[in-house]
Image (cartoon, rainbow, N blue to C red; front, top):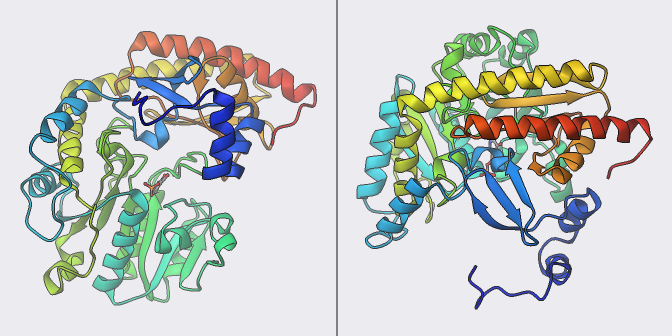
Length: 426
Ligand SMILES: Cc1ncc(COP(=O)(O)O)c(C=O)c1O
C-alpha cells in the first residue's frame, strides 16, 4: 500500500472517516449487513479485508475482475504501456484506440463495424441510446422493468424508479418499461413505430439473472425489425466469455444493431467501455464526429488493458475451462439445493452467470452475510433480494471451485437457520 499517502490508525477510524467524507449511508449499510469489508490486498480471485480476512470473490464487481484481480498479464501490459502512453488525446487518431477498435470488430457479431469508446458502462449506454436516436430520428426507448443499465442521464431513465426518483429524474415519458419475457407486451410497445431502440441486458443482472425464455430475445429482435427499432445488447455483465461464448447474445441467434461492453473489458485495471455499432446505425460518426466527446473515453492505457484482456479471453482453452467449471459448479450447487429444497429454491445458470434463489423475500441478504463469515464475497440482487448473484471468474481453478462449494454449502445451511429463527436483515 502507498503508506505515505494512505494511513489510518485503525479500521474503526477509517470507517468513521468513510462516513464523514465519503458516503455515510452506504458505509453504514454494509456494517449493518454484517459485511464490514474494507478491501486491501487483492490477488486473483481473492480479496483481503484490511484486517487480513480472506474472501473468495464471486461478485467480481459485476465481472470487472473476470480475469481475476491484478491479472499478471494485464498488469504487465499496462505497466509496460505506462512507459510510453498516458490517457492520450481524445481528439486525435490514436494507435492504441484504433488497434482496440479493430480487435473488437474482429470478435463481434457480424455487421458491427464501428466502435465508440467511453470510460464506464453508463456512459457507453448513453452513447448507444444517442446513436439509436440519431439513426432512427425517433426518441422513444423501450427497456424491461427492473432493467439496470447504469446511472448516467439516459441510462438511469431505462432502469428502476428507485435510482431516479431521489434526483427528481423520474422516468420521462419517452422511456417505456415492459415485462421481461413477454413478447406480446413488447409488440404492444413497438407497434406505434415510434421507438428508436429496445435495450436489453442479455441476462438482467441486477434483477437476479432471470434467464430469457427460449426464443424470447430472437423474438424481440424480430419485432424490432418489423417495427423499425434498433436492438441494443447490453453485454456489460454477460459478455467476455462469462456464458461460455464471447458475447452471450450470439447464443440466442441475435445480431444486435448495437452492442455495449464495459466492466471486464478494463481487465479490472483501467476504466474503459465500448459501444460496437453497425454501419447502418453509425451515421453520426460520419455526420459529426465531435458529436459525442469524452476526455477519458478510450484512454490509451485503458485500450492497452482491453486489448490484453480480449486476447486472453479469446484463447480457446479459456472457453473450454469456462464450460468445465460451469458444469462443476452447477452440479455442486444442485447437490446443495437437494439438501434444502424448501429454502434454496432455484438455480439460474448460463455458464458462469448465476442467480441463486431463496425462499424468503430478502433471502439472498441472509446468505450473503453467512457467506461473508465463511470467506466468500457474493452480493444480493438489488432489484430482487431473493436472489444471490453468483459470478465466478473465467480463470477460476477447479480446486478453488471445490473450496467455494464447501463454503457455500455451510453458509446456505446457516442462513436457512437464521431465517427460521426470525433474524432480520437491513
Ligand atoms: C448490465 C449493466 N449495464 C450497465 C452498467 C453500468 O456500468 P457502470 O457502473 O460502469 O456505469 C452496469 C453496472 O453495473 C450493468 O450491470
